[in-house]
Amino acid sequence: MATVMQKIKDIEDEMARTQKNKATAHHLGLLKAKLAKLRRELLTPSSKGGGGAGEGFDVTKSGDARVGLVGFPSVGKSTLLNKLTGTFSEVASYEFTTLTCIPGVIMYRGAKIQLLDLPGIIEGAKDGKGRGRQVISTARTCNCILIVLDAIKPITHKRLIEKELEGFGIRLNKEPPNLTFRKKDKGGINFTTTVANTHLDLETVKAICSEYRIHNADITLRYDATADDLIDVIEGSRIYMPCIYVLNKIDQITLEELEILDKLPHYCPVSAHLEWNLDGLLDMIWEYLDLTRIYTKPKGMNPDYEDPVILSSKKRTVEDFCIRIHKDMLKQFK
Image 1 (tube, rainbow, N blue to C red):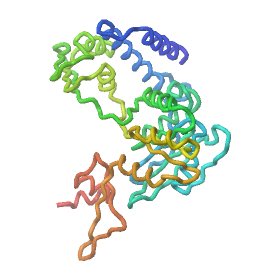
Image 2 (tube, one colour; image 1 turned 180 degrees about the vertical axis):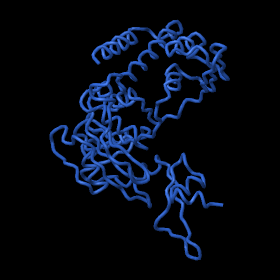
Image 3 (spheres, rainbow, N blue to C red; image 1 turned 60 degrees about the horizontal axis):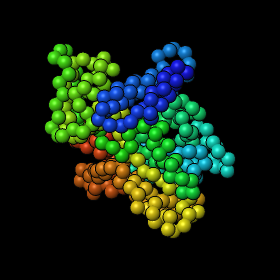
Image 4 (spheres, rainbow, N blue to C red; image 1 turned 90 degrees about the vertical axis):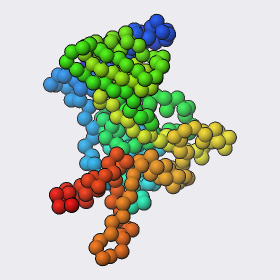
């Protein structure tokens, strides 16, 4: 493990030293590909011994959607869980009060939303520090992430957490790259682009592919993609999910500061302790989860407006609806 960590550090140092320009784009692309491979090795160690591949905390998935609370220790995640779900998660003035994953359920607009209070992560979590691996592994199973930030502490915390999650293959508030990558048996690397490209050229693409021992592939770009986008598609294990930055403890900052923070995208200011703007947060969670409610009407009776069938944004067909009720229903469906 130490050698992999050392290799990652060496590559990160070299990337920090390298100036970013057209001449170094090829070299940087190669370094990024090497870094992505090492990170994957770190997450799924090949050895039989050790602690395994960073398993998450075993919490059975329930309800219509799953939302995870991620943040540094003592930012108010447990208080937020207690107020939103009525579940008890220990709250104290010292750090690392929560040591395991505590689930709760929010009933909102007819949907059951499972909320997970995850232990506080520390810098270096993606490299296995603290219980970072288990925390982020569990975060990967969520439909939406709430990054809880302390309004008093600097906004640099946001960047640090994003870095930890991105190192684990979670892409926040992003769409999957609009590029096609298809391996083939022969014919070399065929690189086509439908737009002017400023980040990738054939040489860089070939270098990244050769790092993955891919020598024959068709790659088509439909937008100005970066080396990172291409690596994400080749790796194939990336998760794209919505994220809300929950700015907690707003009762401790001035109105002027709050007005500035309120203009930032994906932000929701709250005070969990005083229960300020929790309704606004729930509205935002609902919007980001993008769930669909379908009301059913039993034969010869009025529609049931109390108990809708909830479908996710990605699965909205009649088939998905039937499976959601009972898998046998699909066999009898005409």
